[in-house]
Image 1 (tube, one colour):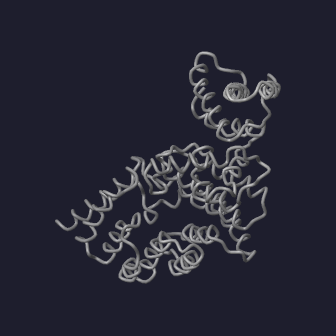
Image 2 (cartoon, one colour):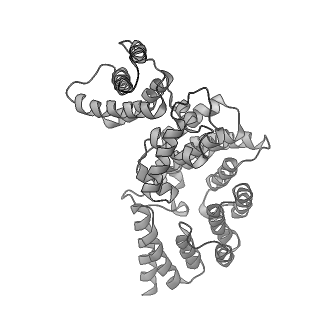
Image 3 (spheres, one colour):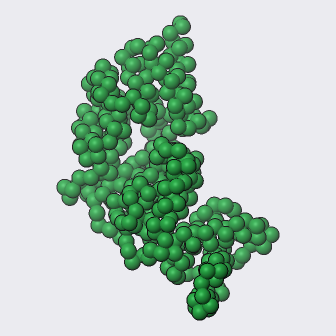
Length: 381
């Protein structure tokens, strides 16, 4: 039995324990104990029903922990609730767990962090990196969130907007990080779209599909990053693009614009361009204006500066960039790109090298280092 199977079963097992009466923190501890036992036992004695095995072992671990602190009558009651032998019911509780972690008693940032850790399977380090905070700070935030939702039941639903934010962050981590969760995020968003008639849910699913359609073209055979303008568009998944565009058009027709619909509209304009040179940058800038109005996000304004540089020239892009805090992630890389477009190769090479030192992952660092080396080689000719 491999770790991928164990990971895929974890949310469902956790959900079963919570639905049977275990509070969230105790259930998570019990499931973790069961996973450790599975790693020890399964290689030599694999179970016929892995999920049923995990449910039984996790439930027993929960009971053992509860007995230590509960009265005799409560102990006997919990023993009677132990699942009967045999296959566990085939129920996917993952989406329910997302709503539990998005409980209204939590702040949005804590809800996202807890869900990424407990359901998404990301490490505390990975979540801290996504939030640009120290790992110790994120560990404390997650611990507080666990305590807050301890004892919460599924009949206290969480916030849809927070669930969407969680799904989007899981998708991004799966798309660009070292844990492949993109397909799982798309699957869960499809479930949510089938359960909830909401234009932003459709907008998020469209956005995921449009980005995921370009995945095969994002890296070269050696693993290096391929910028959007240089990607082989023949490798893009046209089926996913068509589905994403159809979902987006239906959502926009409802005239309830949200940030995920606006982001999907930008992605659709990129997908619609036969070549990079034919991209409708003017319309993309207009969508970034809408997105900035909806979110007031400095990252959105950073991306808008790139679009302005394409639509109105690099100097206009640099002027838009000058209004932003230069400590923003990827600010230096954007400045390098715009200076290169403006013909200032010396400044661009220096900024690419600086940006490489700040890169959030190895692939991006190598890409920026190559860009600096390329420009330095051109200057020496």
